[in-house]
Length: 301
Image (tube, rainbow, N blue to C red; front, side, top):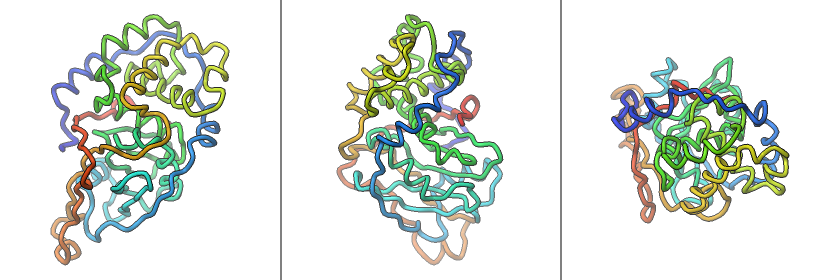
């Protein structure tokens, strides 16, 4: 997968869906009031970790790290095996990330597994100002955002939307979504005003809260009906796709891992051992890849 390119479908989507700022007013100043409820009710998934084969790194990690101007020698590569999936997620953690690896493993593992399975690799990089984006199903966290459960849900929501998890695909540029959006008088918060891609992602945070936290979002905000049609569309789509935003079950499909490549060309470490096998385990279906990058519009923090 070439992260520097955008497919024709994705390019059309960017032109139609990601370039138009929304004018409906925000319901809330932000969604920070959802963090604690999500942390309290999206329980950690037990996991184990092992180091990735020395001298190697997933090619998508390598591309993102180099594109962002960081030294590959500072990246620690880990296999994180959660109890609800037979195959590990490969995470690329910068040694100077301002939050610990434990936070990353914990927060990512709190995502419902049927959401998590639409994420390929997770990358963390240091930054003075925290933000994150999703590139082809790879989530890049900068600064302390790796500890923010809302950011994990938001960035994974881009995968669900743009990797065609839903019946109406991509949801954010579908006729169904625009029709339902037009019936509401608000969007969740100012960040949702960025464009329909970010609006779907913020409504996914709302829907995840509604589906997993007692009392839900509609019990938290008395004006929540102002975004009812957007919420209900995300909820219907995720339910028809197999309750993607609800905890429970085991992984049934995964994005394929990117190829393991030498960290520094044909390094001595890479020459000493064979490249690791990063194929998905038997019985795990492969999710079709889509080339997209939200970096141009998504700096959610």
